[in-house]
Length: 337
Image 1: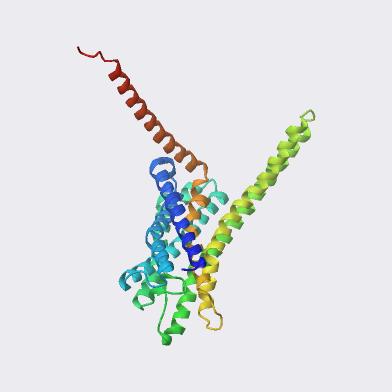
Image 2 (image 1 turned 60 degrees about the horizontal axis):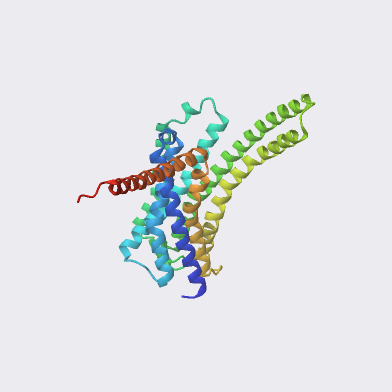
């Protein structure tokens, strides 16, 4: 194993560790906080988190074994199962992000009727559609025997070894990425750009009120005025940064892999195996990014895992103080002669 393979293996191990810990923490927050569970986005987050955990414990270790061994890491049946999961979980992840963007769009554009438009039942129907959509393509690939170990990506995924099926497989691959990656990307762009437009409109209204207030308050201290103007600037940039993060992580993690899969269909474009594995690692990296992008940095989740940590440390302190009290009482007992 050369230095490139060792580096890719290390990247996979790091991604697995971060993904496992962060997604497990999101699940703990969902179990701990009833307020989070009552909200419709919790279903989308739960669906995304469970998919990320399944990918972390099944697909990532097999890809790691494929990188280290430079060959198929498991039996044909297990590899087909892993390829089925890989295709399903990738599509489910993309569509879950699209569902979360639709939820944000409804919350921002229709704030007064959000609870009526996005109920838990509506969220459950969207998750059911996500599963049905995500199951369609791997089911077709399984029926046509287009699942197995792909040497270029060192992983069990979509592949076709029969030259006579090259055209059919190319059409299938193009349709698969169009109805998973491209569809999700279009939904993300349309919803979040609309959210950004509404956020900027509200920022302008707040800016007008702030400037009018500063003009009326003639005797205001200059430092207070500067703080108000700085907060005004941060408010304008906050929505842009968040939306850039949502769309940017989606593109960085999925676009290289999708483009490589499409270029692979043309034999005129040579693709190195290290680049193929790196693209696959980037798609796995989305499982490690999602908890921070969509959950753990939000106020409710921060509050929830702080309460979990406080409760855990409080129990430990009570247990240690109890043990200390018992030993102290034993020392104070009179010794019988």
